[in-house]
Figure 1 (cartoon, rainbow, N blue to C red):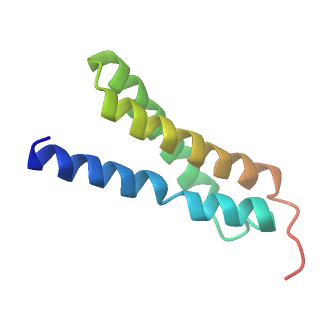
Figure 2 (figure 1 turned 180 degrees about the horizontal axis):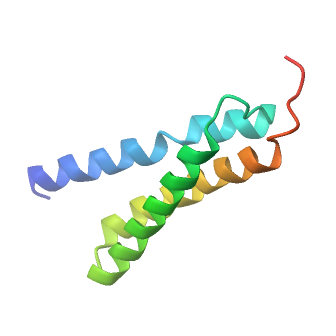
Figure 3 (figure 1 turned 90 degrees about the vertical axis):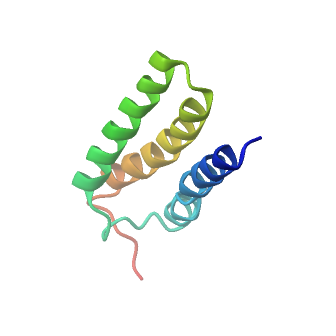
Amino acid sequence: MEAISIVGFTAAVFTTISFLPQVIKIIKTKHTKDLSLGMYAFFVTGVLLWFVYGFLIYDIPVIIANGITLLLSTVILIYIIKYSNHQPAE
């Protein structure tokens, strides 16, 4: 694997898994009050488009990284919508 590919793969891994701690925290606490619905709506839309783009150009790293990111960020978006009026006591 070339150095440039290693850099790209490493960047994809880090940016993709960066959502995992937030997903775990939201699932455990169901607390989403401080998260922006608009930001996540736009973000999920953008990642969905990157995912589709990956299929259109048949780029497996783009498909995998954005597929996982799409899944994790969609979970966050669903929890934001689901718990927007219900915030547990702190």
